Length: 373
Image (cartoon, rainbow, N blue to C red):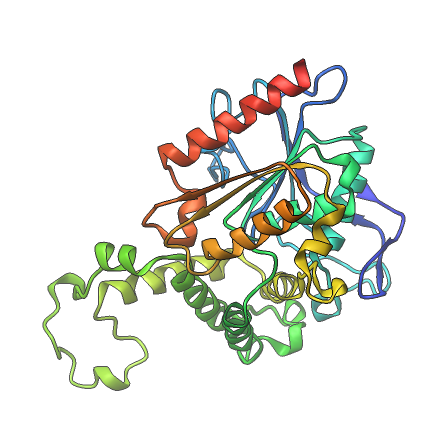
């Protein structure tokens, strides 16, 4: 969907003549009360469910959660997935042509925040004729967007499902993001963010950024279970006399795995998009304008909430979800909270877990009863 009117951003800048890519699943009911907005995390997109046909098959990133007969049942709900501004999966981003210069935005793409994304999503819903959402749902960075929806448009959201998220990033999280960004901007092929014109991609930086990120998504238990200290292909310790100084030698299985993830990521993700989205993660902090008082910040929220965390998620630890729960309870809001003992780390919000999927199914069953009563 194309938007010609300028969107004012939190930075004070504007963006005009932009487009948002989105997918919908299911059927919007007559009174438009069954719409559910899905907000995506860092490297995901609007393609949340189903499988694209044709040569390049691509399964939706939350396909185990969303679809006919699944936890979020698309035979009952009208589900909308939106690709955020600044992304590289269809919505206007750094790779697209600026209407002001006629060249790719590159590093000149304006800074975007979680709040900017929510405002853009609201405009899309306006165009679709949807005044109120039955629910807004997201995990990780998507959960931050869901939380922000309840503060920016409290009257438009009946329920918010916030999974494996936080009210802001810890200093450690910001540090991981900064190291990943430095890997990208110091890549010789980055060229200050204007690498498109040169026909190159800062793949080395993207590989390292992805490897750093991937380490934080997994728990120590999962890493040990999957890889342990196994040497690759029965390699013997010390094979390759100069392995300490080699940039290519891969001896441990975990090294091979991380390099594979990095190589794959560098083939499809945009470096400028990575910088933009991780900055948006860093900036999000609804309590900042309230003296750091999260309870005061969440007083605007009127929706009902489901929050879910996972015990081994050290990137978005359960205590961060409990901060949100406490702040909402301080305001006497309707809150359900589940802390699931799962071994998978942060990635647990994307994986199959009968307790997790059953919990979400039960919650949406309750929403359905509300909107059909």
